[in-house]
Length: 199
Length: 199
DNA sequence: CGAGTGATTGACTTAGATCAATGACCGTGG
DNA sequence: CCACGGTCATTGATCTAAGTCAATCACTCG
Image (cartoon, rainbow over all chains, first blue to last red; front, side, top):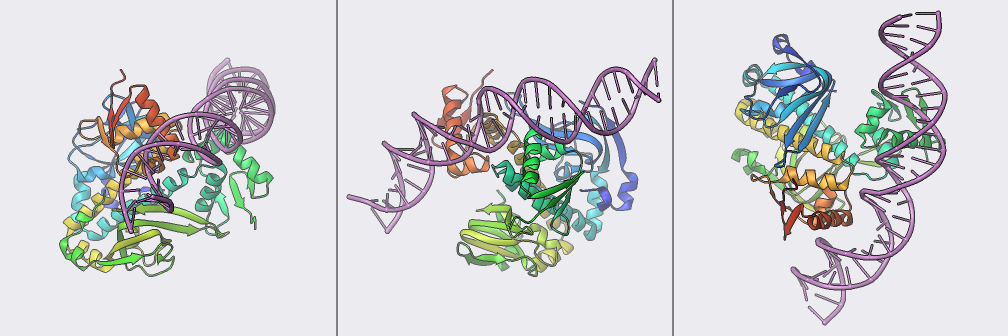
């Protein structure tokens, strides 16, 4: 989600691109804010460090994710961002965005709507992760991810990645899928999953 | 967090209050959007139903939480909201907010900043819940929740509630705390927890 | 003074993590 | 064109961390 079609052309045009190699840092806590970022490829983590120096991961963003949105409203970054895999990002200048928003309320509203939507997504994933049973968790996830017909889900990326999203090991996820299929609760064809009625 | 000090007085003044009894519904999918809500007391859940009619919890809000923010940008609600315990909410009218934002970019920005901040919080809780070990999870949580000194955490609410937040059973949480204390990694005094150096 | 709830700890069980092995698939370089 | 190395998908065997059930104590509230 969060492809960057929310950005008005005028900003998109001026957006620079930056490539990072695995381990390279994009910004650090205290750096003055230059802008916010969209991940075009790779994987970026936001980190804080606790008092003992242990890293606390705040967010792991992948392809298509927008991040550091809150930096728009701060002078300096409040965490570090490092590439955990080779990555490229687009940079949307803070000043350009803010002045756009000030001048064009509709654009501002579009941005707010986008963030509000991401918040919904994040919150529903939180509820999902609080479900203890792997079976339930997978079923609910499929229910949420189901398309318009409410039955068909096309899994994005690899199963391994989906497993990760669900807070499961890949093995556990494979087993749950296999089991659901055996029980006739789902049908699988490649990366398509169909939910069946269990009455 | 998210106490309602973000609302400009003019809106706060006009905000109605509504009391709900456990099980009572605040709005349903498809209802026209009247406004967004702040929970003054109690507990409210947002729900969707999957095609088999099973409820999918999207969010559980408690005292102080703002919710249905995204409804500002929609004509109708996209989920149900029901009180899971007796609750009172304040209602901020959609039209009043939108016209405020259109006329006062600074207010709009404050709102966006608030949501962006909530997004950060939600995302960092997601990372937390993806940590499998209860020990690690609790330690990281304490690290994140630590106050300015980076060492002292005052637990809000009951331990049981915190356990719930962390995706742990109360028992598991008690045990982890007891264990951390025994190992000298934390110190507890009532609802204050102090992180100690483990070097 | 009970009734209700949170905090705590013990005993037991199990779901899911971990470790391991195999097959399918894909790109790459000789 | 094919062998080889890498990754994903899958399944089996095993182990343990955390859930579940249960009992006790402390507290608060009417």
